[in-house]
Length: 162
Image 1 (cartoon, rainbow, N blue to C red):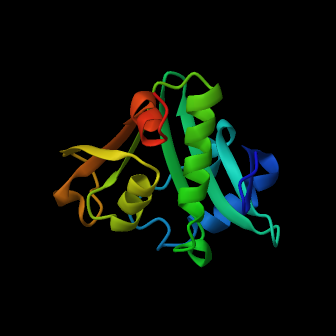
Image 2 (spheres, helix red, strand yellow; image 1 turned 60 degrees about the vertical axis):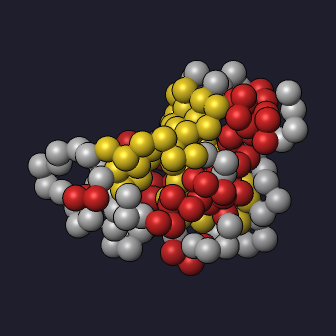
């Protein structure tokens, strides 16, 4: 799959070193619990590469069938360039137009303003703030988690399709 500036393909074994490097950055993982990089291999996770340079940008998640979870994790060098929004919008468009997706959801910590802004730019709206009891809570977790969502009908209306 390609966007204007990105190439997306399923994450595979050849991406493990790139994933480890991405997940080794404490700023990238600031609002996230670490899990083995092997958990990200498979059809629901996409490696993202910058078309102009071929550099590994990060990964996107689009997991589910009828209701799909959108996620993303990018190297800091690519923050603020619109890549997360570009990749997220492309996956949403493909899911709604050809994939049978009815609803896209995304969650993050309330304090993760950057990720919340990406969700909003992708067309998702705030649905709820909720609290989870974590055994080893991350700083800021006392403010809760947020869920954002977009239905196919909302997406079509925003695009002028009825």
